[in-house]
Length: 176
Image 1 (cartoon, rainbow, N blue to C red):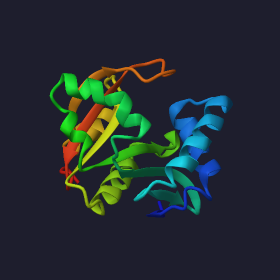
Image 2 (cartoon, one colour):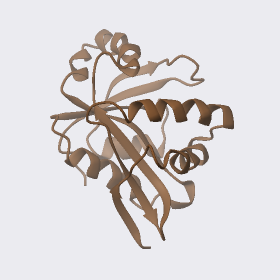
Image 3 (cartoon, rainbow, N blue to C red):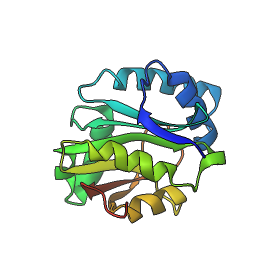
Image 4 (cartoon, rainbow, N blue to C red):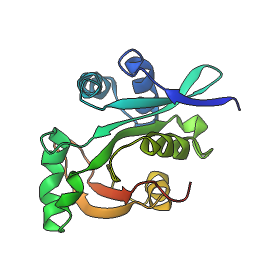
């Protein structure tokens, strides 16, 4: 496998990345259209950056994130849940993993692990936060293996059919 992990101009490759996300996350065309606008907006935020994983020149996975800000939509939704658990300080001085997806045909090969550890290795913040569907899943297993812990569970995002867990880990990540 000729896997290459490197910087990704996500604004220029948003459709290619969202095609990976659609297959990995089971998104329909309407959801992809909404996420396209969200990704384009996120990539304009200070410190936002993305990495891609390519095999044979084809994008098979990507991650993007940014320094967290309490004024970002995601933070405003998760803050009450974190506060209820005494964990709202995690919203400060954290690098948020906004999206991490690997095409199902390339999962279980360490690509997601390499993407998340590579992007957090260059973070100036002392910790990382993210949200994942609140179920026993390979994604949550990966995050736990890297040192992430649950900060809040049963977090409900508007229009999301399933609840999420908010997770956090000190940087650098362990279990690399």
